[in-house]
Structure formats: structure tokens, C-alpha cells
Image 1: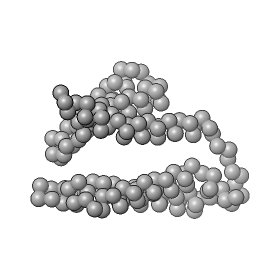
Image 2: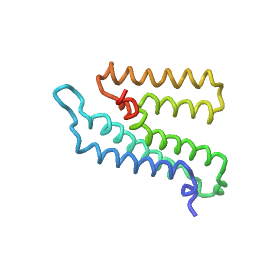
Image 3: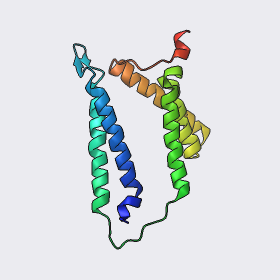
Length: 157
């Protein structure tokens, strides 16, 4: 069996290429530019395209740098479990964003990764999660004049 088939970079590159392709196909039907500036398809089209290009480079690089004499390495299940936990946390963030809004969902995701995954102190985790959520909110809302989801939980308040 080819050694690149057992490499995480190969499979991650394929998965990210598929995700990027999905993002591009979805954004393709949205307005790219409007009279006010970038439309809803502008950012997804660009980051989806960049995601596809970089993931294809990752796959090609993994295939090209394979050593045919190298023995396949065993999977490290602890590392795989940590990676899948991060993916699950991101999926949970996406799932709750419409309900609790961007700031809370992003803050919770950042806190989880820092406090739980990287085992940093609560002070660091809270500072980064609150600062990151407020920073992204400021960048998108005030800097780019785009609206981030506030969540159905807070729309009634």
C-alpha cells in the first residue's frame, strides 16, 4: 500500500478540498459585489477558493514527498481523538451559532480549545475567548460593516 494513503495530511487535504469546493459552489450563486461593497458571496468565494488551492497543494506535496522504502507508521489514536474532538467542537459551534449568536458561539469554541484541548488556565482561556469574540465582532460589524448572527435567543430581548 502507498505510504501517502496512511498519512493524515493526505486525507485532511482531501477533506478540506471537498469542504472548499462545497463553499465555492454555495457562494457562486450569491452576489459577489453590491452597491454598498462586497456582497454575501465575496468572502466565502475567496476563502473557499484559497482553501481548495492550499488543500490540493497539501495533497500533492504529501504524494510527492513519499518515500517508497518507508514503512507505514501506526496511527496515533490519542492524536486522532484530539483532532476529532476539535472538529466536533467546531461542528457544535456551527450548530449553535443561529441560536446563541456569533459572539457566544465563537467565545465558547475559543474557550474550549484553549482551556480543554491545550489545558491552559481559565484566566488565559477567558481572556482570549472574550477578546477574540469582541475583536471579531468589532472587525466585521464596525470595520467591514457586516452583520454577524446575534442568535434567536437574544433577538427577543
